[in-house]
Image (cartoon, rainbow, N blue to C red; front, side, top):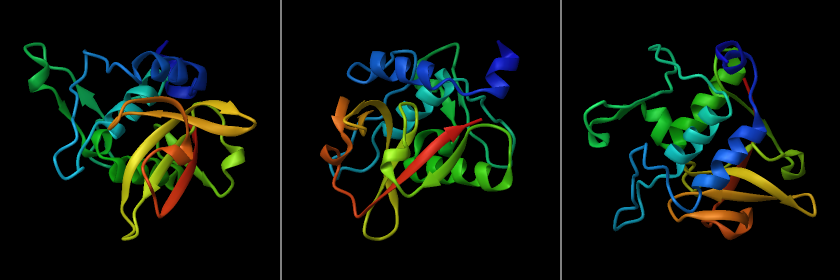
Length: 175
């Protein structure tokens, strides 16, 4: 299993995980609710869990880290990297890994949404250039992605029905 995790991303396993936990978050992970001003949220944490379920290995190095560490005492004592839980950081983690050929999950940005398959990701950017939301493609309808995400829990909705965005980034995921 370890060699599989290091060499291959199973989009099917990532999607299977997403479908199970899209509407009811996995209690084994800390959940980050939205705050009153619609900041924070659980979207990147959820997408990171999906990536990991698909075989993306955690990276504990100081160069471009991506990880989640469970506490044996209490879930409220779990720790994680910023790239695990913040959409903007997760987006750049994947892009940097792709551009620099670093180990771990990689995100190849494509311009055409029709190139995405279940297990790939869509990130949402505001008008200030900040990536604020992350989603996973979990199905296709007429060759158009349906997404699942947290920060409002959603399963297989059209990507245009999520948060309003100034720009969207379409990432094909690999390891």
